[in-house]
Image 1 (cartoon, rainbow, N blue to C red):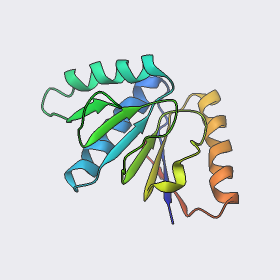
Image 2 (cartoon, rainbow, N blue to C red):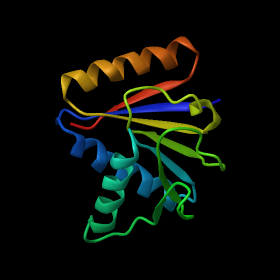
Image 3 (spheres, rainbow, N blue to C red):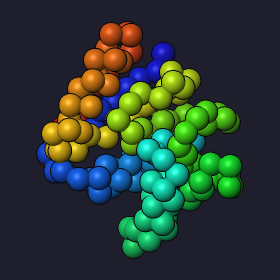
Image 4 (cartoon, rainbow, N blue to C red):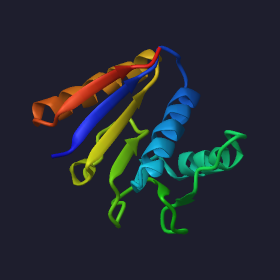
Length: 139
Protein backbone atom coordinates (compact mmCIF):
# COMPACT_ATOMS: atom_id res chain seq x y z
CA UNK A 1 0.00 0.00 0.00
CA UNK A 2 1.12 3.54 -0.73
CA UNK A 3 2.58 5.36 2.28
CA UNK A 4 1.90 9.10 2.51
CA UNK A 5 4.10 11.55 4.39
CA UNK A 6 3.21 15.19 4.97
CA UNK A 7 6.18 17.53 5.47
CA UNK A 8 4.97 20.62 7.33
CA UNK A 9 6.92 23.88 7.44
CA UNK A 10 5.95 26.94 9.46
CA UNK A 11 7.52 29.12 6.74
CA UNK A 12 5.20 30.43 4.03
CA UNK A 13 5.69 30.55 0.27
CA UNK A 14 6.10 28.42 -2.80
CA UNK A 15 9.88 28.53 -2.38
CA UNK A 16 9.47 26.52 0.81
CA UNK A 17 7.72 23.74 -1.08
CA UNK A 18 10.40 23.73 -3.80
CA UNK A 19 13.19 23.52 -1.22
CA UNK A 20 11.43 20.63 0.52
CA UNK A 21 10.87 18.88 -2.81
CA UNK A 22 14.59 19.20 -3.60
CA UNK A 23 15.56 17.67 -0.24
CA UNK A 24 13.14 14.76 -0.50
CA UNK A 25 13.99 14.07 -4.17
CA UNK A 26 17.72 14.18 -3.46
CA UNK A 27 17.40 11.80 -0.52
CA UNK A 28 15.18 9.36 -2.45
CA UNK A 29 17.46 9.45 -5.51
CA UNK A 30 20.51 8.68 -3.34
CA UNK A 31 18.60 5.64 -2.05
CA UNK A 32 18.21 4.44 -5.64
CA UNK A 33 14.57 5.45 -6.00
CA UNK A 34 12.97 7.00 -9.06
CA UNK A 35 11.07 10.21 -8.31
CA UNK A 36 8.18 11.95 -10.04
CA UNK A 37 7.51 15.55 -8.97
CA UNK A 38 3.94 16.54 -9.84
CA UNK A 39 3.74 20.27 -10.64
CA UNK A 40 0.71 22.57 -11.00
CA UNK A 41 1.20 23.23 -14.72
CA UNK A 42 3.84 23.37 -17.45
CA UNK A 43 5.18 26.77 -16.37
CA UNK A 44 5.59 25.53 -12.79
CA UNK A 45 7.52 22.48 -14.07
CA UNK A 46 9.79 24.67 -16.22
CA UNK A 47 10.37 27.08 -13.34
CA UNK A 48 11.32 24.19 -11.10
CA UNK A 49 13.58 22.84 -13.86
CA UNK A 50 15.47 26.16 -14.04
CA UNK A 51 15.81 26.34 -10.27
CA UNK A 52 17.01 22.74 -9.97
CA UNK A 53 19.82 23.52 -12.44
CA UNK A 54 20.92 26.49 -10.36
CA UNK A 55 20.69 25.37 -6.74
CA UNK A 56 22.02 24.33 -4.41
CA UNK A 57 25.49 25.40 -5.40
CA UNK A 58 26.99 22.38 -3.62
CA UNK A 59 24.85 19.70 -5.24
CA UNK A 60 23.30 18.39 -8.40
CA UNK A 61 19.93 16.73 -8.86
CA UNK A 62 19.73 14.88 -12.20
CA UNK A 63 16.28 15.62 -13.53
CA UNK A 64 14.26 16.09 -16.70
CA UNK A 65 10.86 17.35 -17.71
CA UNK A 66 8.42 14.53 -18.48
CA UNK A 67 8.54 13.44 -22.15
CA UNK A 68 11.71 15.51 -22.73
CA UNK A 69 14.31 13.18 -21.30
CA UNK A 70 15.20 10.46 -18.82
CA UNK A 71 16.58 11.00 -15.32
CA UNK A 72 16.11 9.67 -11.78
CA UNK A 73 13.89 12.71 -11.09
CA UNK A 74 11.11 13.65 -13.50
CA UNK A 75 9.15 16.91 -13.36
CA UNK A 76 5.65 16.59 -14.71
CA UNK A 77 2.14 17.97 -14.73
CA UNK A 78 -1.24 17.28 -16.26
CA UNK A 79 -1.88 13.62 -16.62
CA UNK A 80 -0.36 10.22 -16.13
CA UNK A 81 3.37 10.04 -15.36
CA UNK A 82 3.64 6.98 -17.57
CA UNK A 83 6.68 4.93 -16.63
CA UNK A 84 7.25 3.49 -13.18
CA UNK A 85 8.48 5.65 -10.31
CA UNK A 86 8.89 4.87 -6.60
CA UNK A 87 8.20 8.26 -5.03
CA UNK A 88 5.63 10.91 -5.91
CA UNK A 89 6.30 14.43 -4.64
CA UNK A 90 3.06 16.36 -4.96
CA UNK A 91 3.39 20.13 -5.37
CA UNK A 92 -0.25 20.66 -6.34
CA UNK A 93 -3.24 21.36 -4.12
CA UNK A 94 -5.08 18.17 -5.06
CA UNK A 95 -4.44 14.43 -4.89
CA UNK A 96 -3.42 13.14 -8.35
CA UNK A 97 -5.53 10.24 -9.67
CA UNK A 98 -2.40 8.11 -10.01
CA UNK A 99 -1.07 8.62 -6.44
CA UNK A 100 -1.86 5.06 -5.33
CA UNK A 101 0.52 3.62 -7.97
CA UNK A 102 3.56 4.90 -6.03
CA UNK A 103 5.25 3.28 -3.04
CA UNK A 104 5.48 6.66 -1.31
CA UNK A 105 3.79 10.02 -1.67
CA UNK A 106 5.38 13.14 -0.19
CA UNK A 107 3.11 16.12 0.38
CA UNK A 108 4.84 19.47 0.95
CA UNK A 109 2.91 22.01 3.06
CA UNK A 110 4.14 25.54 3.79
CA UNK A 111 2.81 27.84 6.51
CA UNK A 112 0.53 29.83 4.15
CA UNK A 113 -3.07 29.37 5.31
CA UNK A 114 -4.72 28.65 1.94
CA UNK A 115 -2.08 25.98 1.38
CA UNK A 116 -2.56 24.60 4.89
CA UNK A 117 -6.30 24.20 4.23
CA UNK A 118 -5.66 22.40 0.93
CA UNK A 119 -3.20 20.17 2.80
CA UNK A 120 -5.82 19.36 5.44
CA UNK A 121 -8.22 18.37 2.65
CA UNK A 122 -5.61 16.05 1.10
CA UNK A 123 -4.79 14.60 4.52
CA UNK A 124 -8.49 13.74 5.04
CA UNK A 125 -8.68 12.26 1.53
CA UNK A 126 -5.79 9.87 2.17
CA UNK A 127 -6.94 8.99 5.71
CA UNK A 128 -10.54 8.28 4.62
CA UNK A 129 -9.26 5.86 1.98
CA UNK A 130 -7.08 3.94 4.41
CA UNK A 131 -3.63 5.14 3.31
CA UNK A 132 -1.05 5.07 6.13
CA UNK A 133 -0.32 8.76 6.76
CA UNK A 134 2.50 10.31 8.82
CA UNK A 135 3.53 13.91 9.37
CA UNK A 136 6.88 15.59 9.98
CA UNK A 137 7.05 19.09 11.45
CA UNK A 138 10.07 20.85 9.97
CA UNK A 139 9.85 24.21 11.71
